[in-house]
Image 1 (spheres, rainbow, N blue to C red):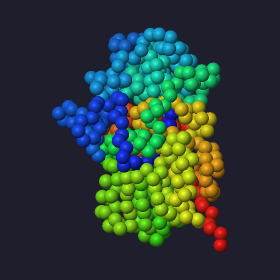
Image 2: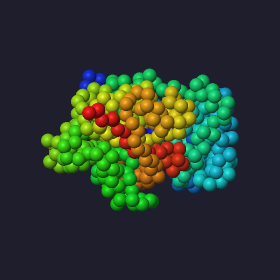
Image 3: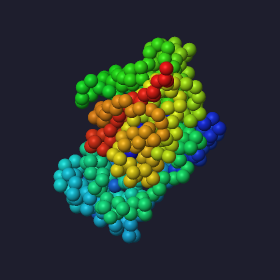
Image 4: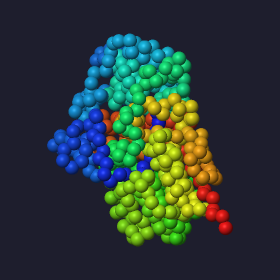
Amino acid sequence: MTTAEPRAAADPASKSADSTPAPEPWAPAPTAGSPAVPGRTDQAGTPAQAGKPAEAGTAAEAGTAAEAGTAALPTGPDPARWPDIAAPAPRHGPRTAIAAAVVRRALGQLPLRVRFAGGAELGKGGAVLDVHDPRAFHGRIGAQGLIGFGESYMAGEWDAPDLVAALTVLAAHAAELVPAPLQRLRALWAPRRPEEQRNTPGGSRGNISHHYDLSNDLFSLFLDETLSYSSALFLTLPAEPRQLADAQRRKIDRLLDLADVRAGTRVLEIGTGWGELAVRAAARGAHVTSLTLSAEQRDLARDRIAAAGLSERARVELCDYREARGRYDAVVSVEMIEAVGAEFWPVYFRTLDERLVPGGRAALQAITMPHDRMLASRSTHTWIGKYIFPGGLLPSVEAVAETVRQHTGLALTRRDAYGPHYAETLRLWRERFTERAGEVEALGFDETFRRMWTLYLAYSEAGFRAGYLDVQQYLFTKEAAAR
């Protein structure tokens, strides 16, 4: 999955065998074996390995936090793992003053109730947002924009009794939060995407490993039994937890039906996830080649395929989609394009075209965002990009259609949107993650990580509830050979 200023995410693809992920700038130095997971410690307190937004400190602030049912982090973020969170936020200077003016102007016009430590309030009423440390909150936003907004939450400087409700208001007014003159000067104040996050074959491996190699055990705590990390397709909304696994299978079966996968079909899957689609395609009698860049996902997917007795029909390779070979009757890719990057969208769609035989079909699931917001943010470094999905970018419906038209011979045959289903999928994941916080902690993921992950899931859910984000199922077809 991938989300944007949201990106929510993706069951990703592929990897270069000779590339090595670069260490994250905010993670501790890795020891022998594999890179350390940010915010994770073992029982001895050492870094565990990823195998596989009044004044701060006042009585008024403490009272506000207690009333909201939340509190700042009890011990503070670990500077070794979270240097940008543990570092004191800028509290003075022109950028902080400008940020405070812009933020207060924006919040004052929204259907929110923003409560500042010390008693001041803004907004027209509605969902509550509590700012425990206004100077730090404004300072981080002044220094880092939306990255600072997210980091301020991770540091415990703001909170919300109903986080999704507050974030949904912000997502619904995303285009209005920054005044038009400042929007036009975005290139001057917004941080640029780091060069090392480009989705080259080597860069993609590091970007994918950052998220998907965290821990299979972590993902299993909040995903359903299918281990599907993409939008489910429910029969009715709102959804109940017991419906999630069947809704994930329904989503997969619909994609396989779109691609006309049946006995004997040669299928290329770009982005393995944890293997559920490969299992279900092989169970139909298809012959599946699935590509991933995540060693953790590859190993578990292979185990699941073997347990289903389908190893002769499905194989999983650690391979970048650009290195795929062979010809296939069908290509299926679930929320992988979000990890490709605009620079490589033409290459991705040409790969689909080149790998399909004449008459072949490609079924894709993709998270999309408004075209104007995609154009405005495509070069911007975001909180999601820094902490959750490095290198990620959600396409727009227009960008997908134009890229396919200009760079392939594929025909866009069908497109179906079902964003409300993703909002419900994310709600179920978030609620389960919250319910199992103790087990997440037992895996070695500290409180800063858990606040980060909670914000990610809530931020993504809010994007879909506001209609800022959507999810599409696409069918592309390749013209049959002339007789």
